[in-house]
Image 1: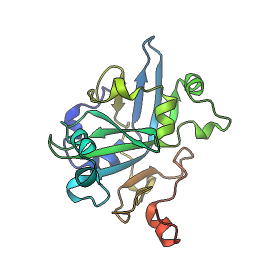
Image 2: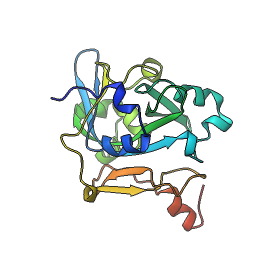
Image 3: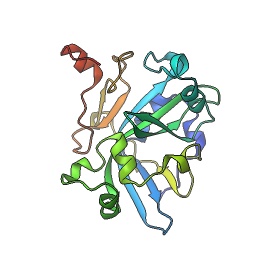
Image 4: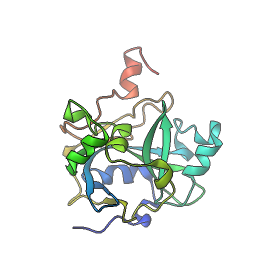
Length: 208
C-alpha cells in the first residue's frame, strides 16, 4: 500500500492536482481501526487568483482566509447547509483548493450505509456532501488538519489515468467562470455525481 500523499504534493496549481487525484483513494480510519475508503472519481479545482467563480476573496472573507492556509490542509465549505470536503493548494496566503466531488466505495461499504442509509447504493457517495456523510466525517474535527494524517488521508492512484479515461467539463453549480474546464471525472464510472455542468445549464436557459 502506498504512503499518504504529503502536503507538498498540493503546493501547486489546483487544476493539475485535481486531475492527478483521479483514481486515487480517500481513506478515513475510524477510532476503532475500521477503514472506510473510496476511489476518487470526480474532482473540481478552485484557484482564486484567476477564477471568476471563486467568490471567497470578494464576498466571503472568512472562507478566503481558510482557503489561503498552507497547502495540504483539510477544509470544508458549506452549500445549502451541507459540508463539502476540499484540500488547500498553492502556497500560504493564496486561496486555492480541490473539491472532492464523488467516490466509488472500496472499503467499509456496510459501515458507510449505517452513516448514510440509502435504498439506491449508487447514491451513497456520488456527490460531495454525500461522501462526507457516508465516511462519517465531522468537519469540526477535521478542518485544518494535515492531509496525510493517520485518520484521514489521500493515496495516489496506482498509475496516472490516461487522457482517454478522463472526462473534462465545466464545474457544477456556479454562475461565474462556468466555462473553465476544471472538473475532472473518471469516464464511464457510475459513481460520478449526476449534476450537469453549469455551462450546459446555461446553454439550456436554466443557468444558476
